[in-house]
Amino acid sequence: MTNHSSYGEVHTKPIGEITRRGFMRRMLGIGVGLLSLEFLGGTIAFLWPNLKGGLGGIVDLGTAADIAQQQPAWPKGEPYIYNKARLFFVNVPAGEGLVDGSGKTVADPKGAVLALYRKCPHLGCQIPQLCDKSKWFECLCHGSKYTILGEKRAGPAPRGMDRFPVTISNGVYQVNTGEKITGPPVGTVTFDPRDSASIPHCTG
Ligand code: FES
Image 1 (spheres, rainbow, N blue to C red):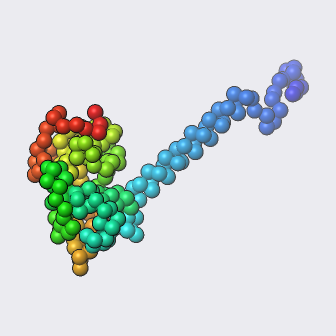
Image 2 (cartoon, rainbow, N blue to C red):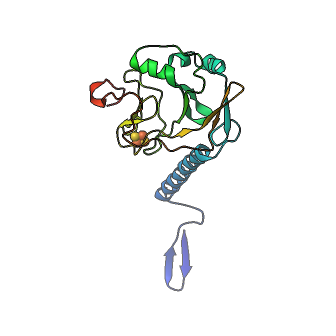
Image 3 (cartoon, rainbow, N blue to C red):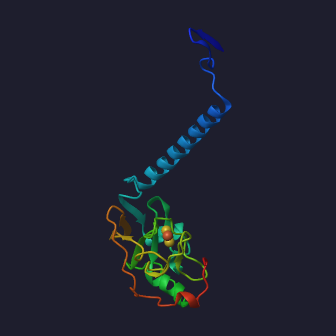
């Protein structure tokens, strides 16, 4: 489009027309903006306290029998994953039996339980279910490793896995996920002193 002025001809773009490069830049900007929004939304959803049976409130997990119904291997020591509150619920005597190979079945540990937070105390990745080979929790992000009791054995994490207090009311296990207890310091060995180098692992 050409405009006339006293200084001669001035070339300008028609109003509302953008160059291809401008268009690409704009689309890229929109794409980045949408991605950032999605990331922000996910982060807020992860951090926001959910008081209805999720992280941040009191969670009723049910009786030992209820839990065994959800996770049939729980009486044999396999941790029960309660995802709404992002925790592992560990049947301690059965879990120790799973690790030392005695394979004992404990239908109701009568309070000998642990509610371990799945958020890795290193940089916050979600810790996967107990590794079948090592019988440790192994974080996939940077290789921190924890025993079935959440005590740190290897990797960059500054401590063991954080946990939540558990109470029993009429046989029902309740976890207070609003009150996080900092994980045990490095070097804590209550159980499972195996050396990381001597056992097979799920991660390197
Ligand atoms: S976040 Fe788990 S080891 Fe880094």
